[in-house]
Length: 118
Image 1: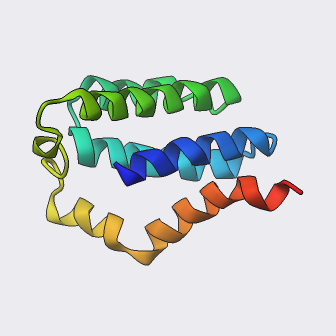
Image 2 (image 1 turned 135 degrees about the vertical axis):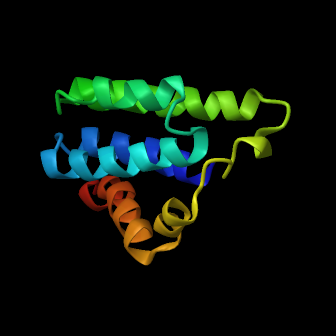
């Protein structure tokens, strides 16, 4: 759930800083990997994320963020959210989240907001 919150914050930071394409592309990759890990590759949100973010525009970022917020709401409203969390985490994908590089990239995206604000 923490990753979903950070991705939502990172999307807002990218928007607040004038939509940088390279930041968006990093966010898009991290968000897609997170959706696959949490919901699985065949879930509606995962399947439509790529389609909705394919334009690489601020509108795509908003649509992608909306899907992440919907995924978060679904997990929170489920009677047993733990049954979804890490259900689809194979050894390879689980390692991605544990790597410092993933945490560092996500942290940089989230911190964009605080660095640009006086």
